[in-house]
Image 1 (cartoon, protein in one colour):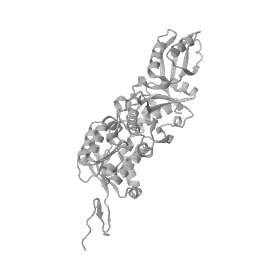
Image 2 (tube, helix red, strand yellow):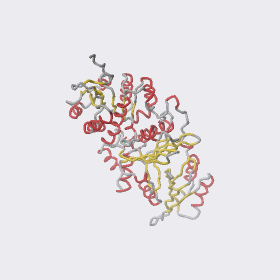
Image 3 (cartoon, helix red, strand yellow):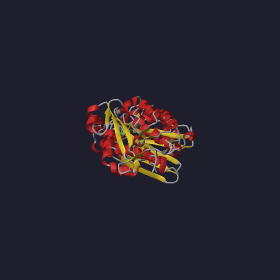
Image 4 (cartoon, protein in one colour):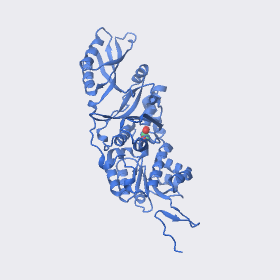
Length: 455
Ligand code: HSE
């Protein structure tokens, strides 16, 4: 009897039966997340193979720290200091890019795609800034670029937005998507610790980016928000149009006053569809303390998505750390493994919408955004001051929702005045703040923090 020709991707075993041969993975970077991927794949190998339909095997590891790479993977995988050695290895089916950054990682990713390899990446900065080019290259080559781990660590938010909510017209997304900032805000509020002390702890725990400025200035959150916005609204990645403001200038005082008014301050990424365009903004935000998302503490992330059919849905989990992020990387490996042999047109599009159907909806500049505000100012404690300030707001149709005036300290003639406004256009509020700061009864600058009821 003539032997049956072996099908593509199948291997004949000693018992004469054909099984899918393992999928071969090349791991670029075996640091915190890469180490987690190695551990999770090894620990759950059996379960993962049962789900994927074949074994997923890390065949090669590239890291500039060869000793560390050998200590983890030596004996089980080929270890090299040259990432291109892995990218060009014809035996590798999927390249996992965990190097980070937007230069070397970009070249490696494009080289892997050019070699016809699928790519899994946690690199939010790279995808938010060069994603359009990378997806176009992948489309051209008929390969997948999977990036669940790029947004909110272990929370499967990309899967939820791209597939689970596909029936919906997404209205808005609001997320706590930077664990380091959330950790800092939680510790400052709970323990009254100083900003720098908490940041150092976040770095020690491995949550912070290589450049922690990315975390505390809202850049990391804006990268993640850009990715979610593109998938939610079917628009290209437009990180350069995101409004970004971090937590580095946030005062303890405002955290306390917000608390007294029934609010928590969180670094929120918000993207919303409006008739004028798409909002894309990251900034410290007051949220009513009774909202679930206001109670997300420490390094945890949460993303609130409002769809027209489903209503509001909330996704919560660890946004950083070795194994939570590895959970998302390995999920992508399973997805890519399952779809490896599918026709490219039968796969889920990278940005959820068919690439030729992406829209060119404009991204709103911050001055056009409409939201509510917390305004804090230091004023002279004398008659008529409040009337002067409310007149400035009324002249610009800015309505006050709540107000808090603190008693003056012993022997002081100045007080803190805090106002919460109803929704107003940012440009109007900019004008009002400039005018208020010019009043002789107002001392120093006005602190402005945006407020979202998230109802
Ligand atoms: N530095 C990021 C954070 C890590 O703190 O959320 C996960 O992207």
